[in-house]
Length: 236
Image 1 (cartoon, rainbow, N blue to C red):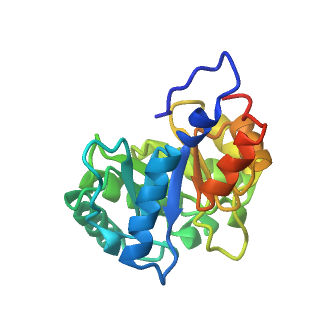
Image 2: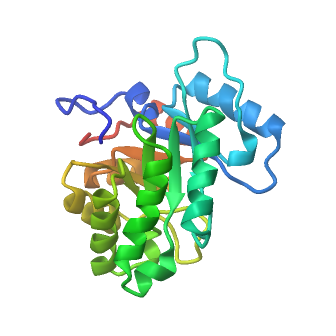
């Protein structure tokens, strides 16, 4: 699943904003912080807000063109599949449109990709379409072969997107190389979300050119101010 935008010309600042999941996942975030996040997302025209499940339900202004994304099994991915599925299901009942789940990174490192697929499938079963399911693979912690195998497992399990990172792993966040590899593996059948370290227009340009169809950004105002100052994101 990909987000449709014209490829005939470089996107405007408005189109850049519509790639962004405006994100607040700090453990110390308050309701007031989330209210401010929503207001900023609407002002900037981002695609969604992405929050922790305890922040749901969100109160959106009437008529707001804003999706609600929530994380599941975050940030370690070491929850059981049943817990991830229950957390996702509860979040959707509370108004989430999209679920960003974290895989068991240890299972991927051990080469147990069947378990990774089963984990994703359990969440997919709990939140069927039209809920959008993104699978966070922590690409910085994986080898190229592991990235490919995990993306294939996510696709086989019915995911809509593969996503690079939580932004909390010590190995780091998104890289252009990982996004290119993820994009080539899913071949346009799934979306690709670059997240973790997308801070500047140059970052956004590089990730979109590499194949990212969504961007996880916490500093959206600064990135879009950079775009408005004279840049555009090419290649989307």
